[in-house]
Amino acid sequence: MLQLRFADETKPPFWLVASSYTFGASLDNDHVLSQDHVAPEHARIIVDGELVRLVRMDMASSTRVNGIEIRQEEELKAGDEITLGTAKLHVTDPKSEARALVDEAAGSSTALRQPTQAPLDTEVHWFLRPLNTTLVSGDPFPIESEAVLGRSKDSDICVPASHLSRKHARFTYDGNKLKIEDLNSSNGTFVNGKKVQMIELKHGDEVGFDTLRFRVESVMDSEDVTTLRPALDITQVSQAVTPRDMPPASRRAATVRPKSSSSKESRGSGDAMGNFALGLGAITVVVVVASLVWLLLK
Image 1 (cartoon, one colour):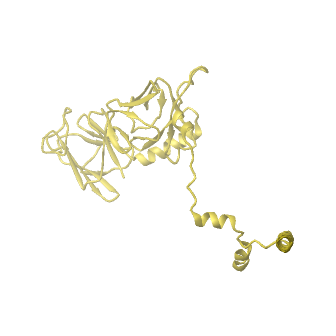
Image 2 (cartoon, rainbow, N blue to C red):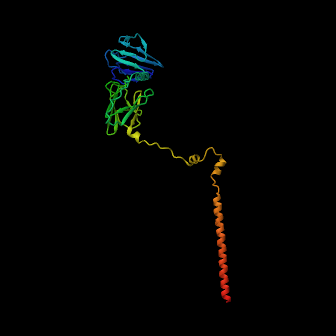
């Protein structure tokens, strides 16, 4: 899918998803152009599936594609430059640009310029980790007190993608809090899918700049994370302590504790002692009774 961008960035870019778009100085147009030499109804773009055409509507005004005046209509493709009077627009394919950015990054270590490394005595708490499939191999971008992201080479985090503004967004870190501020970019700044102007970021938030996405990571939060295993229920516990290769009958038999021989011997010894005590008691009774009888007879 193609996207149309204004060269002077006075208007936000837009995807070519509708069937047609009109351009001109009249307020009735889909896109009103205030530049010089633009006719009231200057041109129209027609979208038919993958085919995109620029149709000239005013023969007296200049309508060019890549610097060449068109007669009636011209098929558009990614990379074309449209000139309507003095207004300039660019036809782009953001997905192709993202792939080109990856190829450039693979061939040049300076394509994605990391911020200047912090001094050894500076503790960095926040990072931006790339989430795009083709950029995940890159190292996360450390954020110190402040970092500006954009396509300008002067940016602290330089990402040379055409759909980024020269100075797209600013990250500020103060008192363990990280904030992001959109610097009036053309395509906007998004946090967890919502467009923002300024917001405080949390560990795990997803920051998006058109097709580029990053995850916010905090060293402090990641160090405090403790992995908890789910509790086992009684069924899982019994399965864990019972040998799995033992037949069911054997498992039940294994739970019955056999009587040992020492237990039998102990019980036998106890019976013998009981019998001895009973015999001694009987003898004692007999002796006492006999003594009483003897005393009475005497």
